[in-house]
Length: 283
Image (cartoon, rainbow, N blue to C red; front, top):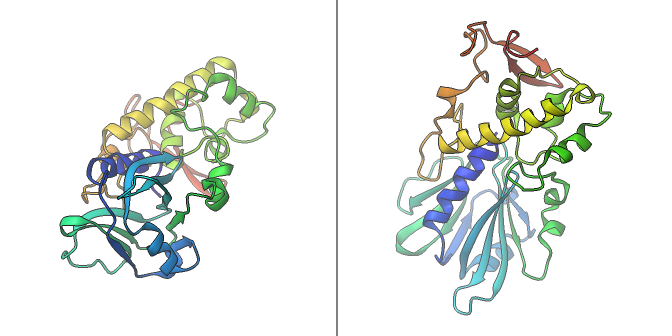
């Protein structure tokens, strides 16, 4: 599943190519991809003629701010969640359709934004301007702080971890605690923090929390600089793989030597998810 660095990579790419461009129309090939409104015709009518002012990211959600092309009045929001296998690709309209293409948005000069999704869990929304975004895209209201938010502080994490008899890896995957963090970067941040994924939140001391906060931000920044991670389906909007997997510390490196101490990386199941760690570096 695309995590924060992958979604941020897509956001930056979209802002490079789609801003101030008018949506001329669209085609929905899989109706259940559109989460709101229920009418596909209403969705297409709502976005047609709109210009994208800016793409924003909230956790793993992408939100395009829309205005009317002629008057620049607010026209609501276009929301996207890639879920497990979603891809947003910027292509020529005459390019052959991938069999997993779900939605096409048409722009000037024969260009389109194509939503491709093999597993079909991805979603798109059009939120009319009179509606609060969180009331329509209800998952937004449940998000915790983004790691790049100024409010994502040691005090914030300390309060979230306080008295929690919960494994730190499981806590980090809770989107109500840290928005956008997923399995890959939780493993990586815990390695940099020298914490085992099974360590209980309640056992963490202030210096460990401080180091964990820095490590989360560090690994996310590193991955964004590498264009994210591609282990299976992730591509940026130009169809290019992310490069972080080649420099990952522990994720997906079971049995390979630790990059610090050469101890083989171990993999365990924790709350139904794979967790990778170095048994020597992470105590």
